[in-house]
Length: 244
Image 1 (cartoon, rainbow, N blue to C red):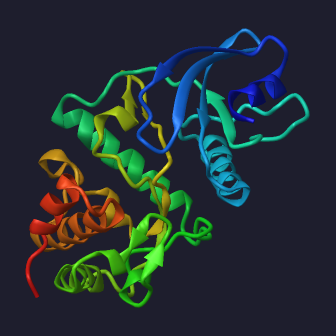
Image 2 (cartoon, one colour; image 1 turned 90 degrees about the horizontal axis):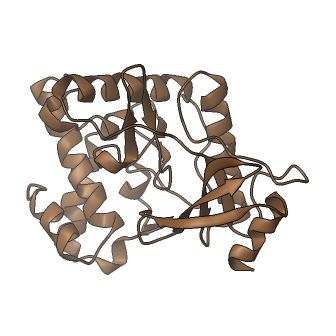
């Protein structure tokens, strides 16, 4: 149905202008019931969208600032691949203090989602010690030596408690900072994993000790290499993962 699905949010729902939203989705500013909002159209399954919208509702109720799903006129959280969410203002993190506030917000996300079920079809980094595929990841497409290096990095996380990770908090476009709060947007890469993967932040803003930072940094580089293999960026990230 495409953007025609927007009419499910009301006859006056209007698409305004395109926004940056990555390669997987078509993201626009929209106006719904007189309010500025954000519409995201993609090909995620209903189960995937139910997981994401349920997560965002939970985090909003718990006090985190996140895009909140706006229901259709008949009460659904999404329709035909389209999700409409509240618009979140603010700018990217600019100072080390901003990034420390981001780290605190991520730790609150992790606290609020301990024991959360995995996103449908996804795998955690430690799941991939034995599994070959999971959503965007296909280890069979990578060179065997690269897979061995990634798995060696992920093995250092084995046995740790898991929770929801945002998945891409170091992209400044995914964070909206104001004087009073930090908001996390673009939850497309969120899934259940080891929390330290979210905490490899500029200037070590999360305050990880040297050992923890090395483990998290290697595991994060391996994840980013695998999740977007094969392009120039993924090759660069794989090069950062030490040989076994």
